[in-house]
Length: 132
Image (tube, rainbow, N blue to C red; front, top):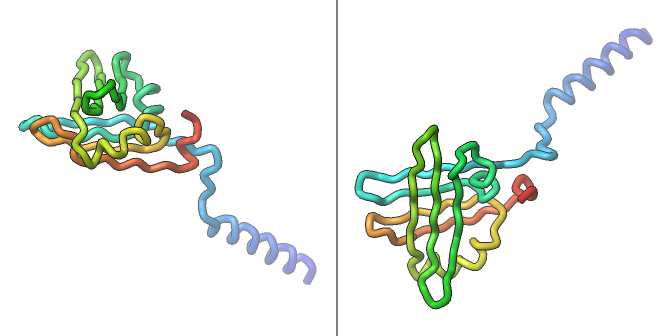
């Protein structure tokens, strides 16, 4: 009877561990991705850490504000021996978030039009982005 209780308790512990949600302690998100459509519009997303740590030697991304000029976003993404450049100038709505974007350590996603206007900016923070 004692052995049956031991085996039953062991099976219960294993089943509980298997059913428990996965823990992501120490999980870091690093990504760098951009694309440009045929008309020149496009999107970049990832984290500044992801762009900095990307394997491409020339890969980088930045949110910049210079004096009275409109804020702008620029990125370069290297794949193999090819580096593609992306940039846009903030419209009024995205310019309002620029100070946050310049100091942001989490995930970002920015969209621009064919005219080169940054029209959408999403900033997402989380513990997985804490190593910037």
